[in-house]
Figure 1 (cartoon, rainbow, N blue to C red):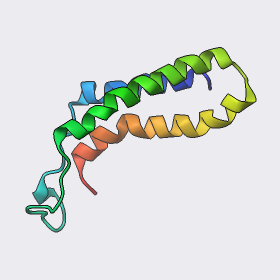
Figure 2 (figure 1 turned 135 degrees about the horizontal axis):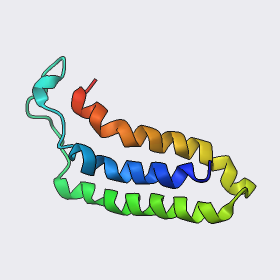
Figure 3 (figure 1 turned 180 degrees about the vertical axis):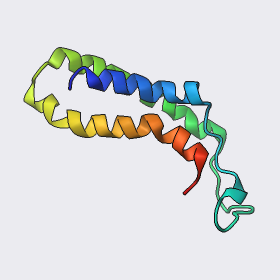
Figure 4 (figure 1 turned 120 degrees about the vertical axis):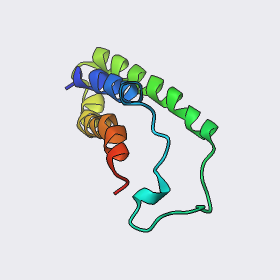
Length: 98
């Protein structure tokens, strides 16, 4: 499992590069079209993701050295699940907002 975390972290970080970045949903893609939503985030707000990707990759690499440390082992399965979902999130979101 410890080898899976850095691989999934890399897949998560590579997802926007391989699938194209997510620019938001088409307002007409919703069952009720969302014309002129009251709040939308500015593009720069998403720059935090670069730091998040780097931290997750670093965490995975540090975890390789921790081996079977029980403090690290407890968190690996939930983190692996989260990273796996995160790695496929952009392609799924591009398919449909639902």
